[in-house]
Image 1 (cartoon, helix red, strand yellow):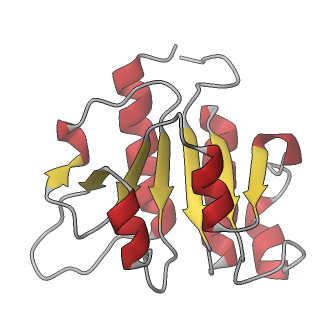
Image 2 (image 1 turned 135 degrees about the vertical axis):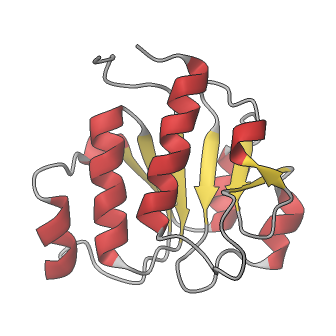
Length: 156
């Protein structure tokens, strides 16, 4: 089943540092109608060969919004719900009621988000995993959560 170009779902990446993951998330967002927001600084350049190899022709700059800092991001998001995906959360993503226009925030691959952001964000969710496993790939995590969000808001 196909759906309209924009689902209202927004994925935000906090200072991403692996170009292939960001490129893969761009492709996922493009194919599923989600918007992507990138909180800079990035740990790579958009001209990086590894990035270009994965993103291919899915890069639509109109569908990506860049924020110069987390301060700018949170300042512009005062009227929107932000959901932080973190292995430190107690609540599973499947036990949460997503809404259209939610922004789902993912931390950087190497370090997550700083404590100050954990303190700012009200909603924190996790993807349950087998014990003693540290984390899923960022792109995989984003795909899982986008799919659940779209299912819940019943995008067609």
